[in-house]
Length: 206
Image 1: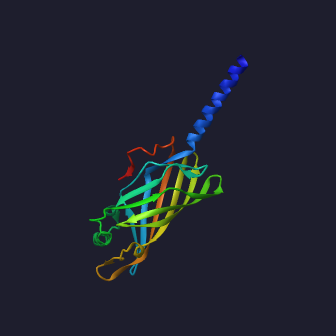
Image 2: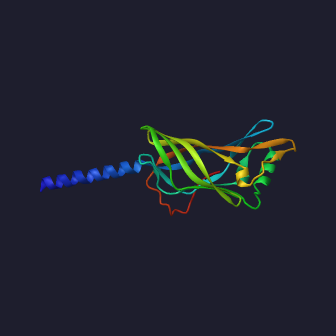
Image 3: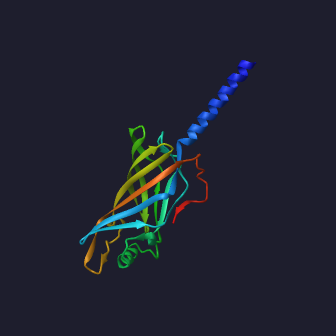
């Protein structure tokens, strides 16, 4: 009987360790450590901007699979995009018709990764971007690295304003903004238990 009890004890301990280890392999996005920026060229110079507020519905990522445990959805207000020049920002908001279409939304349900090393993934994230009333596929390219108990991801995507039926704005009538926009992000994850996709509250950065 003692042997059976010891065997069951070892089995229970093994299950507990395996469960804890599995939980550590799932990571939640930590938005306070995240940035979202955009760059576009013009006839005068390169324009750099950032998004000052955005939200992400709760989701988690399994580095060792690798896979998204639940869909990714990022939303940010058009008025949260700033470039450091009020006249330029006003032209941008007008182009995006911010008063009628206040938010931009990106959704993705899967991730495709290859392992460069045991601690580094090269990934593409096929998703859909909605600007105004038009939704188009947009592919994110990202590198995800594991540093101890945390993950760090950085990447970018390129999109065409004209593809979304947006006319590149001009500033003061003579500075012309080009069509292609590069969106870049830099973010981190921390280990966490599996996220309930039905959770109502979104992670936010303001």
